[in-house]
Amino acid sequence: MQKRQLGPDGPMVGAVALGTMNFVGTYGDTTPEDALRCMSACLEMGVDHFDSSNIYGAGRAEELLSRFLKDHGDRVVLASKCGITRRAEQPFDNSAAHMREALEGSLRRLGVDHIHLYYLHRHEVARPIEEVMETLLAFRAEGKIGAIGLSEVAPATFERAQAVGPVAAVQSEYSLWTRQVELGMLQATGRSGTALVGFSPVGRGIFARELPDPATFGQNDLRQGMPRFSPEHWPHNLKRLQAFRSFAADLGESPATLAIAWLLSRGPQVIALPGSRSIAHMQDNARGAMIDLSPQHLDQIEALLPIGWAHGPRYGAAMSVGPQAYC
Image (cartoon, rainbow, N blue to C red; front, side, top):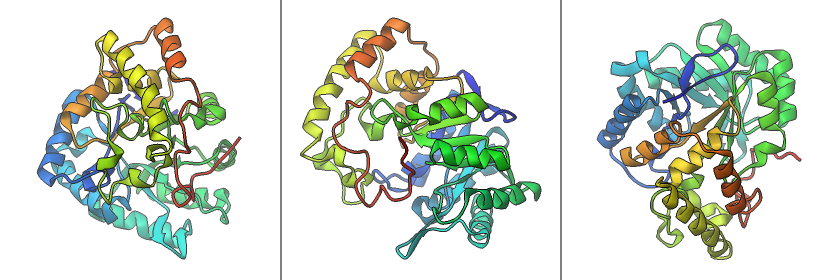
């Protein structure tokens, strides 16, 4: 697998990373044993950057990951996050006290004394990003984290943070059906050499080998609250997706492979962050970092799925609180 740098001074990691949210019931159930087998298979594929958060499964994702790190921690570049509380009265808390409590909890659950990359998961709007950066820089000075990341922020917030200290990575949703980052964040990270870690590059499963059926989503499936899967919008999206799937088949590739390869073509700083419980799905994802799409192929993809093609917003009202909008 090709390697990409995790920030200007960061380590080289596989261009495809592994998100661990899927292992704790976000899109359906799995067993710890299946999750651990998937992690092992990913590492052998060259996927060596594992991403988690203190809120995934209320800490269960980090606890599960700790079991894998006991034997393979020396081969994994580890990322986690803080800043979301899940409290209705205060969903985001970027205070130094809360962030320190979250960090100590993550270190304990992960069974480590150092996290290579630590993200602010969501920015608390009322708290200046400069203050938050000072807290993260203090964690780094203490040796508890190696590098600082920001998640779902606007380019202006990123640039203010950069003025205080180095930001190694920005994590944003980025795929063929969610391209807001091309309105500033892609350019900003390209200028600074900051890694742009695109999560949900397979579009919440729409580019998997089997198209999802929204009618079968379980009660706890995160996609239940996403308008693009609603009866109003899904039929329109399905037509475009079927055309893309036919194109992928003509090339002899899975839709996921093609979607990942497209994402990685957007810039040398881009890293794909899919999450999956399936070894087969991760094989498709990893292959996306092993093929190069020609300019003609990229033009054909753009014609099939032009920017702005998706019907419906990516999030409903509840989930839209937190990610920073821009442009």
